[in-house]
Length: 414
Image (cartoon, rainbow, N blue to C red; front, side, top):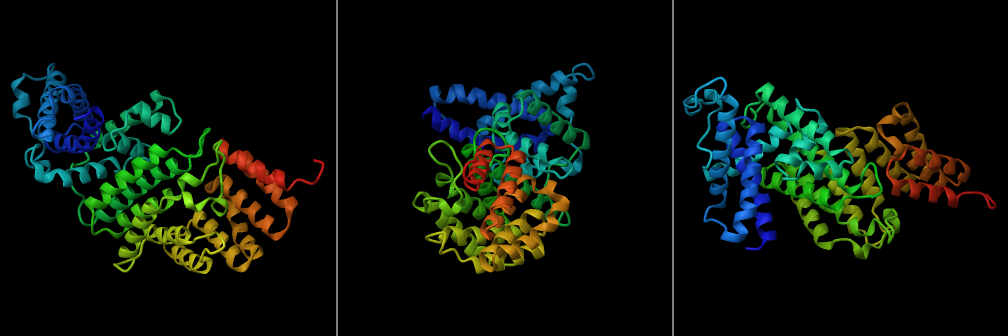
């Protein structure tokens, strides 16, 4: 087996091994250290000696031994060594042995829910999910979110300490808590994808590796929650949105708006998979916001040209989305759909109230206002709005795009 193949296998097994150890022993932070050492040992030995018959069992055994060493060292000043053999978790936390294969899927879901626990702030949820379930190093996560590695290390460490101090139980939430916990999980995955698809700062418009990791985790969530229509909707939304990625930037990394993209570059396989997912889940049960957003994305992706986009249907879906998920971003997108169906003046009336909370939509409020004013023929006001948006944007490609739109509207001679 090649080194690359071993790396893929370890990436797949890492959350299963970590969840198995946490389920059996607790000590999230120490268990993760032990798993990382086991993964490192496997990465060195397996390409040379071959993959064992039970790679998951091998990793759990090695990690368990290392965890025992770490726990023994941690308790050495306070207990004798044989105390560790008698140490157990509270009775309500006890679970089957750590190497029981049948629980692998449930364990990974519980690990996801633990990393996305609502008692953690969103930044900690994202970092811990990428570290423990995604298998990304602290340095990789720090690069993805444009913060120093030391800052990200502290963020992850605080999240682990919060879990340890709060004694979050390793187990599936109660039926009453389950909807809220699952909603938090899906929201964290959505935030990871959004940052990968359209980065909030820096020189690159997108980080394909981070978006791909979000899709991988969304696939995992959908596989672990096959009856959850919103998990399917989120995966569909990611696939349908990411399908446009190859056409979103020009040769020099400049942003290309959807209406001007070369649609032959869009990933047809991702579109087909996303459409199939949303088509399957929409008729089943209550319709959630991810399903509706996926349906909107499908209408965009299935249109052969920008002019052929079914804007009346998109507008109807946004009106439904507003009923169940009313927020400034949805209102902005709804206004664009209104403009495409009823004209820019009707849309401008809708976005004016959003200026009371413009911090919630950052530069996008001014960018969309500029687009609507340009559609209405008020080029002077549109130029001012684009320049305001450019000053507020923190992504360099977005800044360049907004300045370019403003320059096109400049009076001759300026």
